[in-house]
Amino acid sequence: MNGHDDIRLGTLIPAHDRTAEIVRQLLPHGFESFQIAFGTRVGDFPLPALAETVREVFAAHHTAQPGADLPPVVSALGVYGNPLTSPETVADWERLIDAAADFNCSIVSGFAGRIPGRPVPESYQKFGEVFRPLAKRAEDRGVRLAFENCEKRGTWEQGDWNIAHAPQAWEAMFNEVQSPVLGLEWEPCHQLVSFVDPLPQLRAWAHRIWHIHGKDATVLWDVVKTHGIRGGVPYVHHRTPGFGDTNWTDLISTLRMCGWRGSIDIEGFHDPVYRDRLETTGQVAALDYLKRCRGGRFIPNIF
Image (cartoon, rainbow, N blue to C red; front, side, top):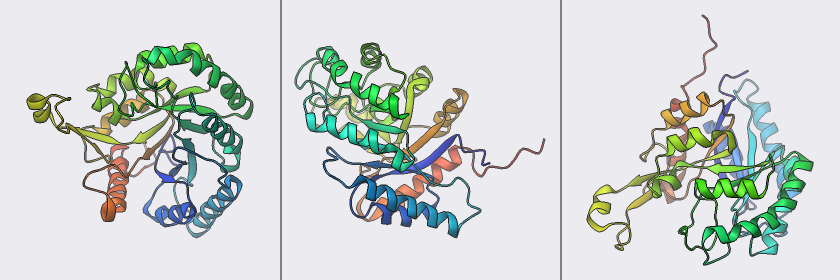
C-alpha cells in the first residue's frame, strides 16, 4: 500500500468526446485522480459510455504499469449550473448521482445555486427545497454532495450563481439540510480573492470538505493599496498550484493533521501565464510541486 493513498493528486478534465483520450495521455505523467466536469449542463451526455471508456483506459494503464503506485480513480463528477433557478440543473445532479457508481466514484459536486440578485440568506429556503430530495437520493446511493466555494463574482448582498462561498452560508446550508452527505468542494483560491487566510478556515472545516480543487491565487497588494478592489484595476490572478501565494506544504500538512482523506485535483485553464500552449506544462509542473509538498516519494518506515 502506498503511504500517500490518503491524499491523491490529480486534475480536472472537461467532459467531451476526447475525455478518455486526454486521461490516457496524462496518466504517464503521474496523475492519480481525475474529476470529470460537465460545465453548466450534463444534458443527454452519454454517461455510461464515458464511464466505460474511462474504466478501459485505467485498466490498460494498470496492465502496462502493474507496479505503479496508486491506481487512478475518478474522484468526483461535477456540474456547475444554478440548481435554485434551473430544473434542468436539478435533473443534472440527479443523473450524476445515479451515474456515480458507473465511474466507481462517490462524490458529485457543483454550485449550491442562488436566487439571482438577492442577499445570500434569501436563498436558504429554496436551497432546502432543492437539496433535501437530492441529499436523500445521494444517501440511498452512497454518494456525497460537495458545494464549490466559488463566489462567481457575487457578494453577500447580490449575485447570480452560488451562495456557498462563506462559512456563515455553509453553517446555514447544513442546518437547512441536515444530511451527513452534504459537504464542500474547497480551494484556497476563492478565499484569497476575499482576503481570507485559507489555513485557519481549513482547520475549522476539514471535517466537512469532501473534495479539493488545486487552484491558487496571487493577490497584487500594490494594486489593492493604490486602487482598492473596486477601482477597475485587476487586483488578483487565479494561479496553478506552485505559482501562487499559498504554501501547499502547510496546506497538505494541515489536511493530514486533521485526518483528511481525498483528492486534490488541479483546476487548470485559469493561470495567466501557464495556459494555451503552456497549459499541460503548467499542470504537470503543479503536479510535481504538489507531490513534493505531500512529502515526495513514499518510503516505507524502517524505524
